[in-house]
Length: 226
Image (cartoon, rainbow, N blue to C red; front, side):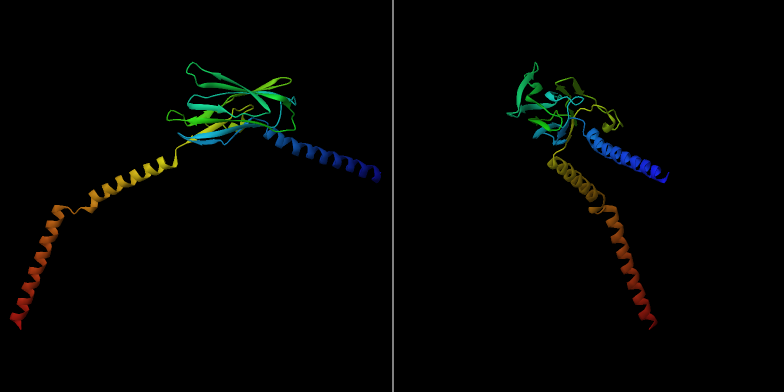
């Protein structure tokens, strides 16, 4: 009886360990199951190279292409040549790049990481956030990474989030605003307390004269008594 119980316990323990190991491997895979972009932050008015990467296909089917739609606010787009991909560029009526499709020379297996890149230029009209919807096509099926988080919503809670790049102010601009504020504050401080007030000066001088007069009267009175 004890032997049977021990054997059952061992089987349950083994099953638990195997299940835990599978879950431990599955959670990171699920967490990374999206098309990401790096860097996720660019400086306003600057240029940068964006890399879009993935480490899975569509329901375990190898990836054949990525179509990336450009957001409004980009001054220029230049896809990076890569021997592993062919590149197709679409342009809008304004002549600017509206979408770029990277087609793999050979389908990218699920166990390998795939990546494509492009150079982008920003200008004064670039918004604070740039979303790049991506359609990932596989040997079988496709996935549209196009969801955007609403205000207050956690982007990680989305099933198929679009890659998003934040646009931050240049360091010089921030420093310039700070310096201007400091200079303005200094001027106001000087106007408030740095320049003596005429009335205050007159009252102070009058008080000093009155004090000296009282001192002289006291000294004379003391001498008379002496």
